[in-house]
Length: 208
Ligand code: B1M
Image (cartoon, rainbow, N blue to C red; front, side):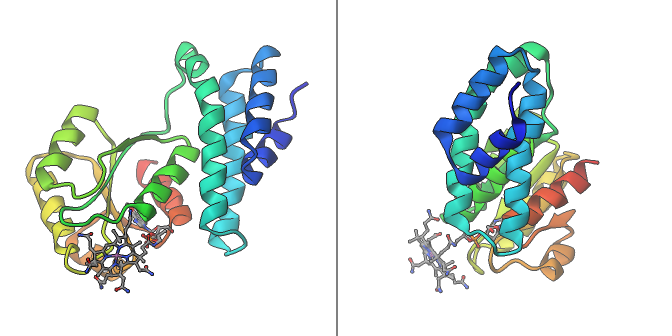
């Protein structure tokens, strides 16, 4: 019988080979893909998210774990599609116009993916028009904007206003090193998170 706790542990350790082997074994035993995803892969990322928040692990560990999860996910995805398992929600994320920093954004995207969200990553230097076009095309429920420069923070407000003016109902979350809760409140964002692990909590709250 597949041991999903051991699978979660392999994800936490970033041991992609073991995570893939265990995922294959669990699928061969006809264990439902959703159970493998929730208790094994997402279970591991959840534990890692708490450790990251508590500064018990750091960015490299999270990146390695996310890679292990991604590789095991590739095995699960066809089964999840067959079983009609829906993602927790669609989360569109990008770095705002004028800003090329994407390490934090990618980390947030990985943690959200680890929590079961479908991620639509529109990359860096994304204009308001690009956000709107891609929100419409994807039907995203949540939109995340990242900014690392004080000079690009105003583009968060610009994009947020443009999204609302376009009549889109997606909830908007902001983050990035210079962004604060006070700034998020000032521009009327629905949510703010200081780090990738908290971003998962905020996204889950906004989608609930
Ligand atoms: Co840039 N840079 N940079 N840079 N860079 C900073 C941000 C800076 C603070 C350095 C400094 O001066 N001390 C400074 C900004 C100053 C300011 O605005 N107040 C700065 C500058 C000035 C610049 C340039 C203008 C430099 C120049 O060319 N003169 C230029 C701008 C380019 C542009 O964007 N147009 C520039 C360029 C670059 C590189 C390309 C060289 C490179 C980026 C590579 C890349 O991202 N692919 C780079 C880097 C690496 C940095 C530093 C060193 C590191 C940023 C980083 O990746 N941190 C940074 C200095 C520093 O922070 N020590 C600096 C790690 C990352 C995991 O953290 O992104 O904060 P962070 O993400 C966190 C949280 O903020 C949060 O979760 C993440 C994980 O916990 N978070 C969210 C992020 N997005 C979120 C979204 C959410 C929720 C949470 O919801 C949607």
